[in-house]
Length: 108
Image 1 (cartoon, rainbow, N blue to C red):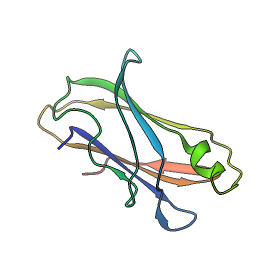
Image 2: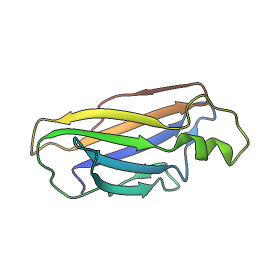
Image 3: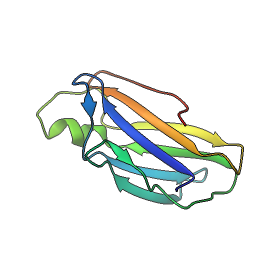
């Protein structure tokens, strides 16, 4: 399993957000991995099984997702910065999304 995984839920519709492009970056802006959410809104394999400790960021291309259904949105993309502090822990970074708001939390 990837050290980092993600899940995008469309909170406005109450269902997984399918087809959202996602990219994982290291602290220097280097691309570590990229993927697209599946039918369950997940990117189960986002990068390697182990990453060096430190800061990372995930960028979600939310504008493209909303454009597919002609839904106006305030956020063309969402960026979440976080820090890996435990080499043995799994880090799950979910995104709860709506056209004019979003939230996240440390999942498991």
